[in-house]
Image 1 (tube, rainbow, N blue to C red):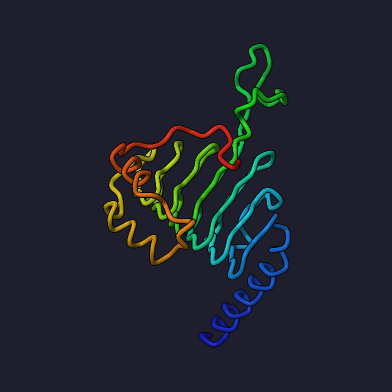
Image 2: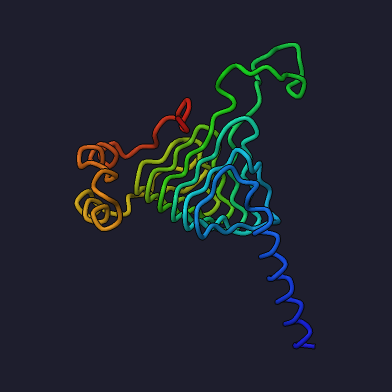
Length: 206
């Protein structure tokens, strides 16, 4: 019986791998070593993914009329949800499901920068930018943009702390990024000293 169970498990893993490879070209763009659960829910053509990204089990990433951009070296836990877009709720005299005209702020995209870890069952909503090196705790609901290297948790998500101080972040950046791509000391001071979630961007994918 154990041999049969092992065989079934291996067949399922192989089949999932085949499905993933077959479905990967549906994404707008993707880099090397990109893995995702083919049983997840994706809008595909609106999603761009970098190198060395794992989207975790049963992810939901939807951006029907906007864009989701995921950088490189990004890890998702199971059942993460990313939603770019929403409904116009400002029209009186019509049920929301019948309102198809947008006011301009509903279909906002989502950016998840490099080296981000998103915990299990976290939800990231439209108009949010998750900064480089940030960590989103499991079960968090992210409604505002997250500064680089912040750790956030809760509903709505709030900054718990930063992974390191400015000097340590600068050394980390030197080890991981070319000089032209590194965050500046002034910008890092601004992010950490402000110690607050950033307002929702109008078009975070621009």
